[in-house]
Image 1 (cartoon, one colour):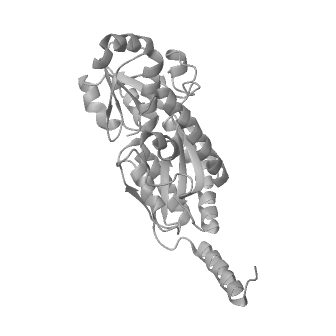
Image 2 (cartoon, rainbow, N blue to C red):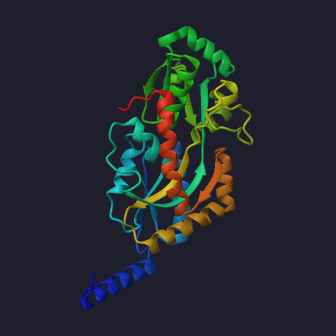
Image 3 (spheres, rainbow, N blue to C red):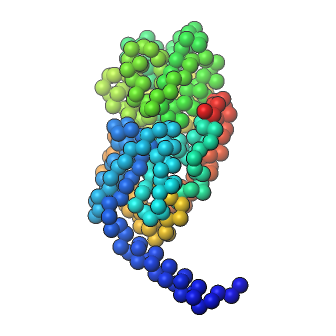
Length: 321
């Protein structure tokens, strides 16, 4: 097919415009969207990275909380935003782009086609917790007690990995505990403290300070391997469930169609943030594990995580809402 002179000129001008845009980017404040409420574990994560991004970019970076649908309201807002690099999603990719495909009958976005991957950040995990006053000192004791309680037992959850962890635990140990949904895991704490719910899985960012403060008792971690510096067994060990390995990955995404030079600039900045000593200390403070990677690493990860959660949803017998 022949291309006219006008077409060649238009293509050249477009290329020049994109290059110029990347050279001057950013010229105004950047918005980081997180699909969780302010003060939640995910919000703490997003605000840390937003602060570092502001330092590197020289522009204000505003965190906007769009909670709902277990991180998917925030993801949808970014999917529908202008692809100009000024609206960024920091999210548990495991939840918003993989698990939610099986938690909901229909998502308002395509987790692959509607986004441009930028970087992976770190891998977290969840902790099985009970209230401090509970008589159960380990997973075996909790399991025996929940079998006796039958369908009068209950657990809270506020994220897909927490739901999948609880349902996989139930399915493999023959429990009938009823799941009670909350906007976040932290929102269920009053009911946990009062004994209205028996147990729950809470993300390590929010859960670790609770354990250290003596407010809850940690029994096991959901990661497939023991977490350095954490004196808790894995669910695979403590519950005798070999396939138990739920460790969500956090990442950065932009709307589909964002110009490559802008993606590359943000990829470079987030890579620099991941290499900072301050970031290593931050990740260690939440007992998460480094999982830094670029745009290709995240693009390769998402389809694999979707496939993994298809199997997890089947094993845990999760019914889409």
